[in-house]
Amino acid sequence: MSSQTATILVTDLVGSTEMRARLGEEEGDRLHRLHDRLLYDAVESHGGVVVKGLGDGILASFTGATEAVAAAVAIQQAADFHTRRHPDQALVLRVGLSAGDVTVQEDGDRVGTPVIEAARLCAAASGGQILAAEIVRALSRGRGSHQFSFIGELELKGLVEPVAALAIGWQAGRPVGAEIPFPPLLAANDRLGFAGRAQELELLEEAWKEAVSGVRRTVLVAGEPGVGKTRLAAELARRVHEGGGAVLYGRCEEDLGVPYEPFVEALRWFCEHVPVEELMARLGRFPGELARLANACHSA
Image 1: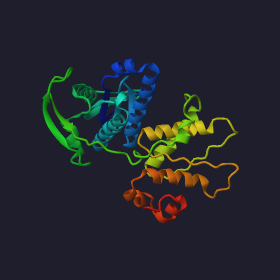
Image 2: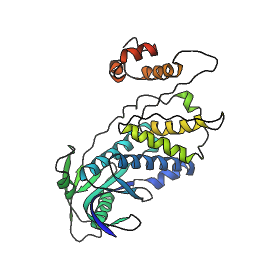
Image 3: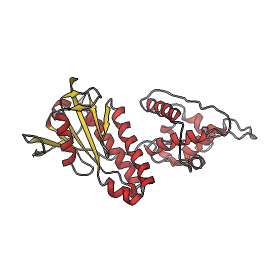
Image 4: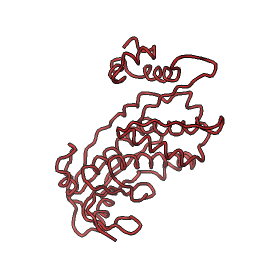
């Protein structure tokens, strides 16, 4: 076993048992998988490591306090965005943060006072709140422009001394692709449950994460007709859309020789759902060429 200085993040989903009872097992499982994806994506995209699941939450470790705070905010924003889109499947989370020396066990688990503090602060938080120990603010030293509000010295179970606790403010955000609906033609391919293709789906999700981080990625899926290529792509697309990403879809008709047909179809869907005043800026470096290609953007 070894020790390291880390910032620990602990989350908990409020009212999970009641929600599962209301939704049923199948829909409850789907929502739980979405919950896990949102949390894992937020942690990993900010350089953290998910140490383990905690049933209705996670325990994650970061080498930097600023990154841990940013991940906590991203988690709350992602949960809030989902809740506003699906109020009947609300994801209400509480988050606790602490920092200090922890022991890394052989199985990768972390133990130590910061872990206990983070877990107890998470339990003390209300739904939608992030509570952090004072040391987290001290370590971040103003980086990230996050707002800390002192709420008092809290007596936490299992700790001898009170912990100076602060609430971290966050604002609801709208992901860039939030206003673009999921393409109906693609939705027709995900009516049946998805099974198998775990390795292929993992590769696609990894490419998507790299693209989100700014790395250009193109993935080609090949195979015989009927093996499930479109269903695989639809599963990834649904997960991306649930996380706030923009999903565009275009296809080639075998009997039609329309130039650039899949790109025209995808661009038209984009143009129809982006506010006119934002369209040209959102089309990137060559908006005029794309607008003419789509033949749906002349009003911009």
